[in-house]
Length: 637
Ligand SMILES: *[C@@H]1O[C@H](CO)[C@@H](O)[C@H](O)[C@H]1NC(C)=O
Ligand SMILES: *[C@@H]1O[C@H](CO)[C@@H](O)[C@H](O)[C@H]1NC(C)=O
Ligand SMILES: [Cu+2]
Image (cartoon, rainbow, N blue to C red; front, side, top):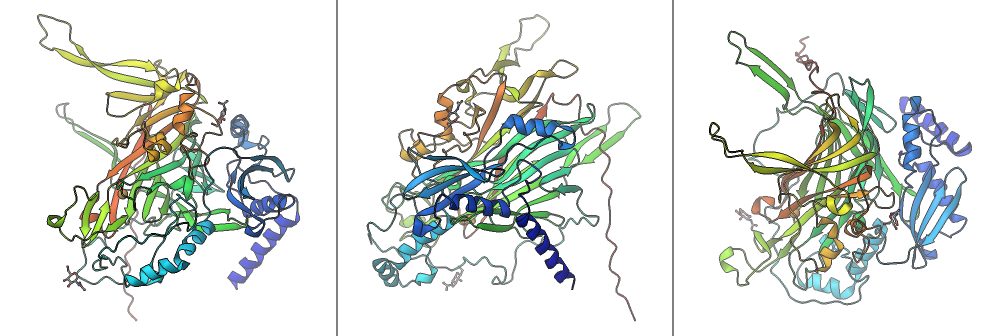
């Protein structure tokens, strides 16, 4: 009965939306709604007949980034009462073999811009296209025959579009490798048999009073943080307008205007005819949002997590939904926020400890064989930690060997991880676009080099050396290209027009993770396309068209529209609206433990306030209230 009522309620509200005039979502960064996707399709249908038969397909549909100044004046108006910026959608479509860039305006319900893309590269492949390409191969008679010859079941064969040619233009059946057996590759809990591994069943954190955060539409409020969470078919989870409450100033202060995944570059290191082309630009080719998966309560995200769906357009323009594609939860992992035991004052001993709690916004994108867990973690201390966890299944190739002693070649380009199975060497480069706005848009990038100095000669002081900071302001984009690990330096984004009481520029410091820069040569085709990994950190001048590090058109791109090319413009970046790009890199030499599924390997970075607050902003944090759930006592009758 209750369910029936609910259904009719939902029906009424949908009816209201579609029959009345169009209602704009309350936040300028809210993802496109089902109603909006319908409207886009209807508007475009007036100009173009839609569908593969008419050779018109939607390759990307997303929010057309509203003008930043309009968003900021809306955001800073009391209770967000100012007029919302015009709402528009940006569409990349294939029409009769051409790529079109279309902007649809919602209030005028019209196409306001329509351009044909000239230049290299192609839009993201839709799921339908990937399936079509795959089935072309699986239906191809000589291919089916080759599978039969190997004693395999075609229904268990996976084919994947590898972005080099297009369809079946050529078929080669070159050699038969002994097929790896499926022995020991089972990973479904329902199929696994005892003895089981380490016992973890008691490690559970429950939130009997519910989570401590509030979600209002797409705005998340928790502790001293407020941010907006959204979903894009190419980037996946998008954080915007993240600001932190400053108790001294009694107001929210801007930190991150927008932050999201920009690209994932995964080149493999086997240059043979069968493997040389295996290099992926996951977000640009397959869509890191399109490949995102529904998260499972209690396993993908802990108890108390709140889930959100991702809605986007399929290739015919109708909406597709990935339910529970993002989750938000409080993380309490037994870490210490800060502590001190005062032992130096005689007769006095004080211990103060504050346990750490943070808020995590998570998505998991499964691009083919790999699963990437992407976490944005907000800490009450003002830190934003971005973490990428790699798990899933290795990309493997069959070999005739079962033991290292049998290897005849110089290089098998990987590691024998199981009988007749080599896990091939490769990299994972995960590039984030971070549009930091520290207390406003006009920021500078400071490289504080730590330099060793000789101590002044003195008869009384035996010290010979010390280090001190040498401050360098990055004046241009070239000054801001950073390869980590070459120098000891502090990287800080500051607002030079805002200072603390003590005169320090307010800022946020980048605490990088381990650096793993690219090892391919600069003249190698994959590296030309992946040139945005040539530096670990880049700063560019804000430009709303420069969002995707691999270029707007990553598929079969030629590297002429990457972050590396934009940086070559060498624009001035001092006291400007600037964007930071950070690449989390992994060189992956597979090992046996990575097989058949790989235990999560994590890396990331942290953005941490540096002279942003007047003092430790979590000094006055109260202790966590411990709540114990009442034990169930068996009732006796
Ligand atoms: C699978 O592997 C286990 C352990 O290595 C071995 O005892 C068993 O005989 C294997 N089974 C098959 C069917 O090869
Ligand atoms: C913004 O970026 C686009 C794409 O790279 C470029 O064509 C355009 O010239 C840039 N605009 C400015 C003002 O730099
Ligand atoms: Cu890997």
